[in-house]
Image 1 (spheres, rainbow over the protein chains, first blue to last red):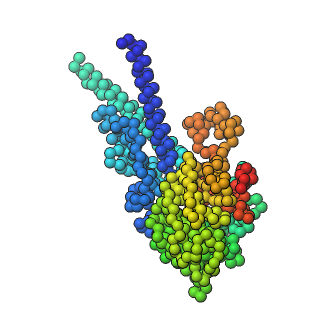
Image 2 (cartoon, helix red, strand yellow):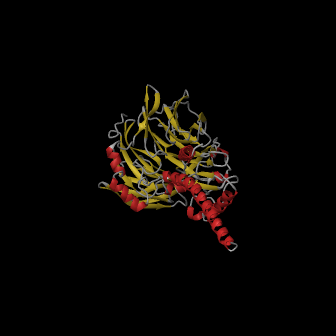
Image 3 (spheres, each protein chain N blue to C red):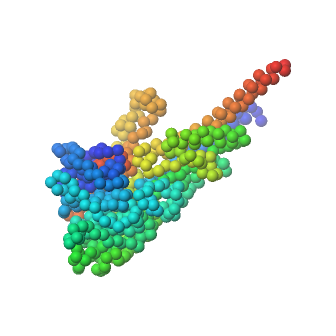
Length: 185
Length: 361
């Protein structure tokens, strides 16, 4: 196969991948717009309390059917809506062991600072890498369409960040090895 | 397209007008009730009523008796009477052990009903001998009662609940109501279930038509169901928009719903067939809209400098910037409502006019 064909195939592959990513994100966006229809709802179990129903899960009638939007076996989003809160759990692309380690450390870094993010959950749901919890109090003080924008943008950027980190790790490893081995030449 | 847009607070949970629409009572998403009075063309703050411990979820102002009833998530309700400029509260013993979600005066102003998370509705009336408000419970709900509405005959109520059903009950109180009034159902004792209607989602809002021959309820599955009583014939209208949170009949053939789509939506009926008509807050199409949105080159660069992106997408194109939670009739005569007001999570109260919106009522 000539060089030109190989180049064209790589460009086409990238645009195809970009197209599936765009479809995946637009599907997540429209599901979120339907799921984040939240209202203030006082607890039915404890008087004078107001809890996110998706976390307490005491009354089955207040929970809506969870939806999984998945691009492949690893990259998926689980959206669990309820009457006053939505839990969004994201599975991030992990191609090899290095990306798995980078993803775990990066998500742990973010989750430890969950208070600053407001909508982030401190622990991800088992089986996923990171979880968000959006309640009716968030939609009262913030624009709903900007919250959806934030989540979709987060999904786009976290993939880019992890690829960049992987490149940086590989580059640093190469430089370290070069420096070390010059003493033997 | 609207008469008035008032920014009253950061977020308004509920509002109510007095009989001649010179005063508005609303809750700014906390435990207070604010009353603003009209002076000229503007509204000025007049009084702040602080008696509740948690957010006030329902307000109603009776046009006949000029009394305000408020209910809150602290499972209390108060009846406020205006005594020479001061609003005096009277605690109502609701006997519920969960939050109250909604409250409505009956058409005659002598009873009111409170929907609650205790899976029951408290119908309260004033007991003269003991000089306090007494409540009686309507049970038989399986989950939180989210909404209710009184029939024009002062006896029937329709309730909506998160157990996917709308129900019609009799709320006739001996000593307050007289027998033999106009009613689609035969006279039944208090708390008797007269009809149960299923819904595909949680029932968020219920409303009787002005004649009382039918009612409508909106579900969280983006559906609106119309039921004629007493034969119980239902008609379900499904629409593409996000669910409705409150509905209001403008007349026998027009209904406006408000909800998460941030715009009032009109439904009309032709010969008894209801259908989705249109959204009433469509932004101006074409050039006017684009220019207003800031798509000009100057605005693009301005936004790039200020916010780092060249699209100004923060403000919505609709008048309400967040979901609308309540719709109240503002001007009604002879069974037809020509003006209505909406309040939402963005803190705005907007008064809409059907003539300006080109709605035939």
